[in-house]
Length: 281
Ligand SMILES: [Fe+2]
Ligand SMILES: [Fe+2]
Image (cartoon, rainbow, N blue to C red):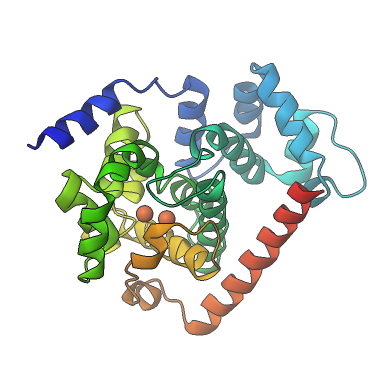
């Protein structure tokens, strides 16, 4: 084990634990049915989270013309699955919103990339009749979690990584060679340490090589494709976008065709444009 890898792994140990409320929500995303009462009971104990969530529920994208005043109303109007995805998005924003200098990402680039990939993965999951849409969404939202920790180490080793990428290596493989671990495997280790559900650990760890996953290859493929679509649309581009390998065989494996991808790209770009508009307002 190299010194760098030891230092990187020690950094994981010093991370603060994930909030228990996030863990409960993530577990819920892995279940086939989301219970409305249970979801409300998890959220309502956190006053700040509830207030923030109701603020988002009252943006034109969700509320229409009638305001949403309570969580119960939000469940009725949006459905439990959408509300669960919204609250998970709220909970994850803080950890994915910083500037990643090593990855060439300015403030909120990673967050934009993550939300774009998540929206794409959810649409694709619906298209292939995968019932765990909330899980596909969440896996894609968190897929590059490892970059948050690896960024600082990458900054000092960028020359070596760039040289390998120029020689034709995939970005995360170049990270693994120079730093001892890629952001995909590191993200999985963080997810494991925080007690995330197994499916999420796999989706994060294998988002660049879904067919190598020891399980849940379908979910891993949805995240792989969601990530690629965010790259194609130029959403939150950083250095990895220039060197990410796309495994085109997952398209047919999922039962999708080029027309499905075109449709998904259009829908994601429309949804992201709406979000950007709201942010700019
Ligand atoms: Fe990645
Ligand atoms: Fe990514």
